[in-house]
Length: 75
Image (cartoon, rainbow, N blue to C red):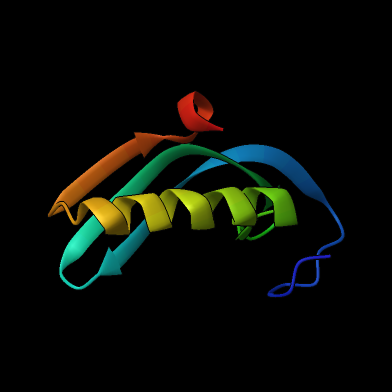
């Protein structure tokens, strides 16, 4: 169920995740998600969230000003 509009129908989709850490921007493309069919809100599974955390921590260790990663190539 969607937390925003309470719709009961979600569909698989892809999202772009972005994070800002100390002035460094991380972009992760093609992240699998569930998308609400009514309002378009996107949700990540626990597994995807854990992988995004790993990707974010790796990017922090490199401390690049901009980092773009394709989820499907690192998952």
